[in-house]
Amino acid sequence: MTATLEVLRTQPRSRRIRIGRSGYLIAALCLVICTVMLLPLVLSVLASLKPPAEAAATPPTYFPHALSVESYQRLWDYQAGLPRYLANSLCTALLTIGLTLVLTVPAGYALARFPIPAKEAVFVLLLLALIVPYQALLTPMFLMFARIGLTNSLLGLAILHTAVQLPFSLYILRNSFSAVPQELEEAAIVDGASSWQVLVRIFIPSTVPAIVTVALFAFITSWNEFLGALVMMSKSSSFTLPLILASARTETSLGGTDWGMLQAGITISIIPCVLVYLLLQRYYVSGLMSGAVK
Amino acid sequence: MHRSRRDRFIGIAYLTPALVFVLAFTAYPLGRMIWISLNNWSLITPPRYVGLANYQRAFSDHQFWVSLIFTLKYTALITPALIVGGYLLALLTAPNLRLRRYTRTVVFIPVVIGLGVSSLLWYWLFSTDFGLVNRILMDLGLIHEPVLWLGVDADRSNLAISISVIWKVIGFGMVLFVGAIQAIPTEITEASMVDGASYWQRVLRVTLPLTLRTILLVTLVSVIGSLLAFDQFYIMTAGQPQNETATSVFYVYLNSFPYLKLGYGAALSTILAVTILAVTVLQLLLTRRSHS
Image (cartoon, rainbow over all chains, first blue to last red; front, side):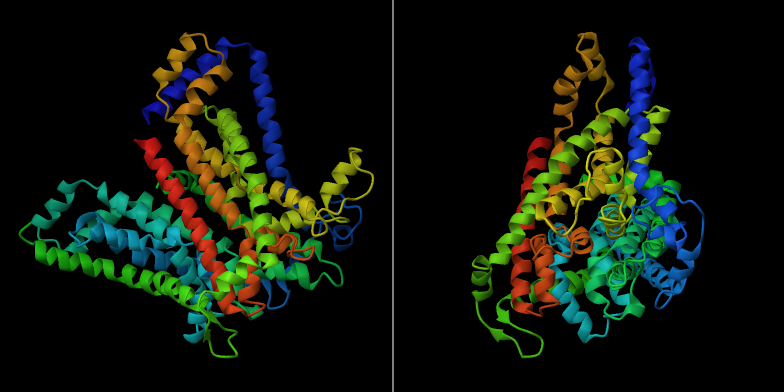
């Protein structure tokens, strides 16, 4: 924290010492970089608003000559309908958040605060999914899910996403719980609080940022995940948003891809991620740091 | 500590759900995968034990090598771009000045969107007749005919897909590098400024050595991510031409699901998992060493 503040204070001074021209150069560079990064997203949103004829034009236009929501209307009615796919993606993501928290909050608490036999070994076992990529485990998982009726099921997909997300979440929560001051907990125990009450009244309220981070990453992972959903979902009515869009790309390609509709779908998939990111940026970056420095 | 026995019991109770979950949905599939890899199994007929034959088969399978070499080529193309590009962006955006902070936020935006969705977006941008990449290049006079970017030539597809993924993930490395650069104590930076070192001399002699651990870390995370590439190739080339752009994970997917060669698919998965494990162990060793 102090380091950041120091940077804040010293940097402008060092900039001022140097000639102003490099300042302009850097500003220009920043603007160019922002433009390049935003351009694909802006072009996609604009393309989703082109009237159908223009969206299918060769060569393509940069900016729509007229605006139309027809691509969104077609997406709304595409196959089982956009509401269905949105609901599938959203339910899977919410189930993933719920499952992840239900499993990792108590486990993180146990690892941080209780004497567990062979604690290190248990922790490593729980982090198993960090070393084994889930891409490699899809065949056995598919066979198991097929046997217990969890294929084409949002719960099944959420279980898969939870398995992917569990090590990161557990790691973050265990570290946050370990950082909660011991005195708080002891005071509550003296007052006769049970371990569950200590968890709910002391640990959870004092680790809200970590819990938000865990929920945020579970959401993003689940909302965006593709290969697992591709393997687990064979009925198009249980497709998530990325799946139905990918299949719209190939299915309509015989009669020409419906580019406008595809861009409408891309726009809709991107909006929640970008909103959540801009609102919870702090949690995002801190989660990334603590997750990567494992 | 007088409640220690009871505490132990309570602790295990809190731990049990997660433990059962990991045993059921990670450890069991792992064991099952190894068992399946020792059998020939097509779902229709019962599994038949074949020992290590599936592994031997992989090494004489032409497509296995095509996929592996293509995946390595992709990794070799994209990793330096991500590290060097991400580091330069971090140098630019590390100072907490307004415009630079905004730039950092903007560069990170594509990281939060899905790889599948960003691949669809770039599938459109790179499409021959409807894509804006060809339109821009033609307007700039750099090309005269629309280029067939995807699914016709393996190297050109690799380049196009790498560009799309660089756009998507470069912010990841940048943010971690920014964290590392900001964590350098100011006295060190100030001391080298007093010494009269130029900006780039300072970067080379102070910033780079002090952030080496993060550079290693981001490199290995990027390498693992690239070795596991699937979505972008499935969506943008579907492995075309002739599975030349089918990555290793893609080939596992093809064998296990469309082809239903479960045993062979599992053997390929195991080889993949061991490869990733080797890279992870390397990562742990390197970070341990540079830590101490």
